[in-house]
Image 1 (cartoon, rainbow, N blue to C red):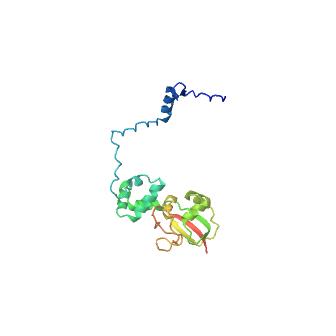
Image 2 (image 1 turned 30 degrees about the horizontal axis):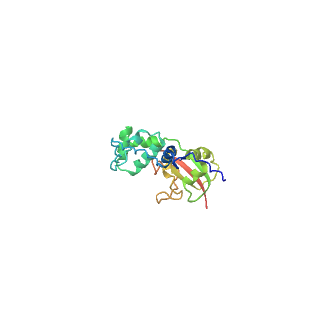
Image 3 (image 1 turned 90 degrees about the horizontal axis):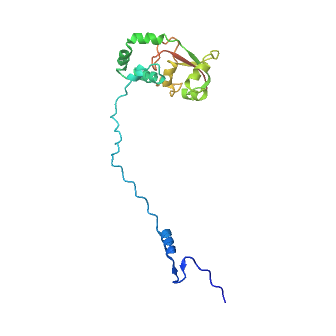
Length: 202
């Protein structure tokens, strides 16, 4: 006689039907999980994005009030030269006349910077990549006066010279950049004098 198959605990041996506990287990496993109710949208209105104001002329009053700031000097220098009316605004803000401003600018001590073996057409931004930021070019090269120089460019304070970092050495606004010693003002920004001597090659 063959042995009886092992009894299934989930089968009611009397009725040969699934037991109630098995049905409960099956219904629990087959019932899909009910997703949690979606979060109701917030009833409070989200703040609308800020609408940009209409385009306006740049306000340089803050720049004028912070002349010791490098960026402000650059902005002011460019505006002073290129924008009509800015000079009057500058003098009103600083309580100076143009003559007083120029006298103060011309009293700034000249500094000479030698950049050795500079290929013609090199940009100041290229020199920055070689020597680091603009300041180290000044500090590292200021004593190299023994090098022979064949051309030089006259800029203003180190802060203002950054205005010309994208201007090729060989050309400034379509004009020759060789400025003779004794020039009494900087044509780029008129704030002091700063001389860059380039030993041009090629």
